[in-house]
Length: 255
Length: 331
Image (cartoon, rainbow over all chains, first blue to last red; front, side, top):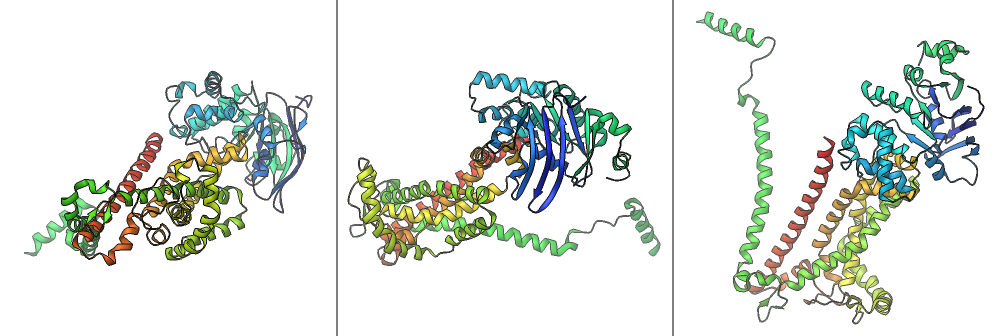
């Protein structure tokens, strides 16, 4: 896979919390319908970086970003761009499942469409079912669409959050350690799901679980101390890394 | 003699293994005393409530035997001819508290949203402290401020303006006295705002950052994030805050007595003077000489007690139902 036509491309991203620089000059690109994994030890800046990709980083008080992120060639950090419109195109799933407790299962999925101004019942119902099917949750919740989103189990809640993010059909989906709060069976279900999802969206996923990165991703970036050490085909990273630090990390010498 | 005893001891220790034999109950005497003291205190609180109710009933009994339950709906108050009816006071309490809620609830929620969601942290702390200071001002000081500052301003500025804009409504007709139902409602609104906004702020703070991020990441604007992640999830908490504020407004005595005008009358106009249950008791108790007058005031007290009790218990019920619904669904 070459950088022929990346859908998402980050160029020279630097990010700060107040005066502290968290990440330094990070550039990656992702081809359409691929999964890109970001791995590295805790505190290496991988979560900060993924939050720069949909302008969530700047919501932290005192935080700032420099650099470019191109989505299909348009810079999301361009001066005139409304961050709200960026986040509608680049969805995000968080570490802890966070469905809205005041909303039902169906309302949770439909909420993104409602925010986009769509209120036609038939469209909403259709999208709710489609998104829940995409998230492999439909069969489990089709009889409790009206119960609160928080009434589901942890793994179901996380798939509900995936469905919620998919409902607005974003071309890119960011996932920040989406399985770290889940049990192994729920984790396996989400990993399976990712294989299906990448037919429709491009996924960038942060994981602290190297086996997970090896299983699900096409390309892997290894982060260390706020810098990106290596970014290559997943197979290459795990079998034949170029950098000694990558090798040390994946062989478990630190991290 | 000694031999069987040691035998039985060893038998016991063999069945209990490494554990000690359970001690007889009175060995833990401290526990039992503690338990009984707490139990007596808890019963004492209930007895106190019962005692107050019974005493109010006893003292006000002559009123109910003479006027029956119509005492609560009739609207005559004449200590000289001993004709009594508490309708005007119940009306005054309800209306002044409603005015207070209508003014205070949006302001308090707005202030809490601003302080928790929008204001820089330093400013939020300073303003939050000032809002809480409002609760520390004695109510008689509010009353004085009401008489000397608020009432003249209402008489010369706000009430004429309301009359000329909304004068077609009966609510804003009649001469602008300055002193009256509206003034009492505004004073009450200021007094209950710290209560409502303090609780709302705690409720909003309890909502996790993840909820707000979920909304933001879906492409919600600032306002949509607040409405979706904060306000919707806090409905029952906001409701509880409003009810606590209402409880304070219903019972507030001094400041209301000073600005409401103290006339036992029901008028559609908010400009007109009125009287509340609390204010009539405060006003007349010292001068009530006849048994009938005392009984009438006690009956007002009973009514105030019952209204507060009903509002608090129905609020508790609603909050309980709301939380049970969300908790039951979670399990």
